[in-house]
Length: 582
Ligand code: ATP
Ligand code: MG
Image 1: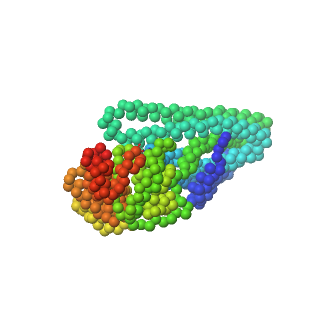
Image 2 (image 1 turned 90 degrees about the horizontal axis):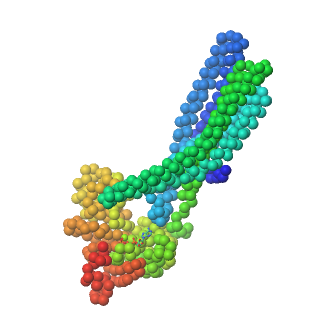
Image 3 (image 1 turned 90 degrees about the vertical axis):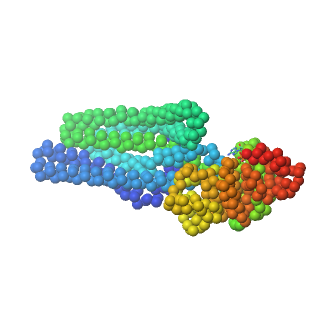
């Protein structure tokens, strides 16, 4: 069996250390429970034998009360361990969930492009749920059951060495055969988890696109796919359970054998006059007790199959390192307007398919650049490089003459503000939506920003002011309001460079005016790169860059380009921008 023991211990020690006290108490409870299991039949044996010998009722009732006491302690310990177990396992797994979520949030965009949110949910929550037993009970149960097993065997030897030998051999044979069947299962459990995460990925995708799917008549196809996924999960689970139950079935056979052994041996000893009726009871009870640790050990091993599969997948995820990492000696990036330069940047998402080719331009601090180009020419890609969601394959992207790979990531994210085509709003209060859940931003500042950007009137119509809850995805807001909210958000962040991937949706003239004024305020004293779709936006640019298949077709001062009748830009304006700007 190839079990990554070191990984188990690392996980256990990392996530159980914070609750050391509880784990120790849980251990005590489990061990007391085991002791009670060993003691109880001894008491009953005493009772049977003494009753047979005609002991006085007082002595018998003392034993009966003792038995009652043992049972009571057993129950209390049982309840306590159940409570502690739940506690320990939830705390440990939640810590792990936290760490894993934190880790994945720091992974590259490339990773998130490949892994749908549904898959991530299953990997972060589902896989870890499989580990709950592993954290709370695994080691304890293994230890406890080994102890119980040893205890029972020792007590059996005490009764008669022959009985001891027979049951020792029996236990060994049973353990070996269970161990063999258990190792078969790991692979199948891994397959089951894989199928599950694919199913969740699919569901997430479908739910995200419900409208499109319905509008385009894709429902039957989706249902078909859904059935296929469910069937795959079914097949994988059935396989895993069948193999798991092989272990189970074989241990059941052993149980039958052990009962027969106890009765046979007991009867033999009794007929030889070497045992009392009480001893026969004791043997039968211990052979039963013996089954429990063996069965539990088998069950723990079965859980271990599932846990190992999950641990492997979790470890895999932890081992993925972001390609974009902060330089160990990262330098700070001063705030204020940023000068942007691309120096011979070549970049591709997939090998051998360059999206940007030897791209160079320099935008001085405080200037506004209009970025034009056909769809798919690489405009959004440029903005992603500026955020360092990806690093260029060749060349360098610089802010204020500093290579982005050299600067602190935190400074970079602070220095660049983005207004995307689609505004992401959370199901949270207006305040949290604007400050990104940063409670340190004072209310007056938020309200002032909204006034400046033309949201004042909208804000005053909110029933609960800043505490008004917005719906997820910005439902109930007009496209213009959503845009203005996005502006306010960036305004509050106060970055030195603003990237605006302009919404191509048409707005009514009044809203358009509002937006124009807001952009004026937003861009004041900042550098900006605007992926422009509207003539009005193009006209506010100082510089124009026309991109074509990842290369600079033309770059220059807007007024100069306009004055030159041979420039691509003036040609564009003459023939109509629509071809390029949509
Ligand atoms: P649009 O005007 O439609 O927004 P764009 O100029 O912003 O287009 P980009 O989004 O930069 O274009 O895409 C440029 C090219 O890169 C496209 O061919 C696109 O297919 C490809 N591309 C974009 N994102 C990815 C990605 N995450 N993985 C692989 N290829 C991508
Ligand atoms: Mg784009």
